[in-house]
Every structure is written in structure tokens, then in C-alpha cells.
Image (tube, rainbow, N blue to C red):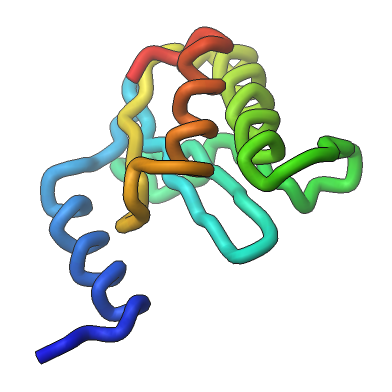
Length: 117
């Protein structure tokens, strides 16, 4: 049986989330990617709270260029916010998306800005 794109991603997401959880010392960095925008959250799963977030939809965000360049700017921004909040080590949750293109650019930029995966 062939799955639709969204159902396939949901199945991959469930498989990933069985193994990955965010703690207070190592929160989970969850990525959401739409056709035009990208956003990330730093989540503590033990308390069920979002610690910080970054998105290409924020009012003070002014990145121009390709979607991949925008994703890398969001990665730098989340790294700055996470380090300011006292979280240097994280667990990366690609959320069912392939580790390729915009998701990879975001992760690489966050690593370069100081986050440890």
C-alpha cells in the first residue's frame, strides 16, 4: 500500500519520537518545515514546555535569499537563544523530514553557532 507524503512523514515521526526525548539538561530541538517557512522549538518533554523558539515568521527576522539561506539564519538564531537560556547540549528531532537541504542547513548553522548535538 502506498502512503501519502504526510502519512509517510507521520510514521517516520512516530518512529523517531519513540527513541528521542528532551530533558531539562538536554532539550529536544524540533524542526517544522512548510513550503515557504521554517521554525524550530526547544522542548523539555519532562515538563511538556517549550523553552524557546525561532522562526522565519518572527517580526524582527529579515533574512533574504533562498529558503536554505533562511533556514541557516533560523539555525543561528535558535543557537543564540538556546545558549542565552543556558542550553548548550540538545537532542535534534528532524520531525520526520529527511536530513537534507533546509533541515541540514539549519542543523549545521546551529552547530557552528555553538550548540552541541
